[in-house]
Image (cartoon, rainbow, N blue to C red; front, side):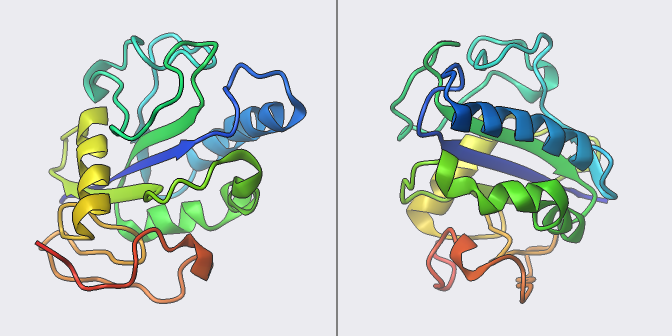
Amino acid sequence: MPHLALYTFGVLKSPLADPARLTQEFYESGEAVYREIGQHPGYIAHAEPAEHSRGALFGSDWGAWGEFAVPAWYGKGRTAETTALAATLSLWTDLGSAIDAVYTGLHRVALNRRHDWFERTGHPSHVSWWVADGAIPTWQDGVTRLEHLHDHGYAPHAFTFHHSFDPAGTPARLKGIGPKGDMSVPDSPPRG
């Protein structure tokens, strides 16, 4: 049975290494969110570097998840001192489990604070796609699909929670998920 891959990307207002209170709150809440999501029904795994160091994303060993990559439009730092981004790559048993994890619990609380921490870039903040059972998506897969979503709109190989597809490629639009402000791509039909 296919699994859902989920890639999220956001540009932070300040680098992860910034000692400011808001940055510290973001980092600390992120650790608690990961712990809670790791226990969520339907969660399979997420990309983690072999050695974790705040802001050390580029050049880290991500194992089967591949080399860390970011969208072409990300223009901030790439060192541990200057990196100003938050990105996740995870696997889920199904779409409903991922949506539930994002819109409940500690992640929901953090999502309500996103405008305190993240810049508004005009780009989608997440993309999903289906992978074969046993397959591990790579960071480059996530970047490629997020860029496709931004440039061409949603499709079976690059979609959002609001404009989703089942593993067969049939639209599976779910109503009532998340706040209306979470729309990351205009409400339009898929474009080729």
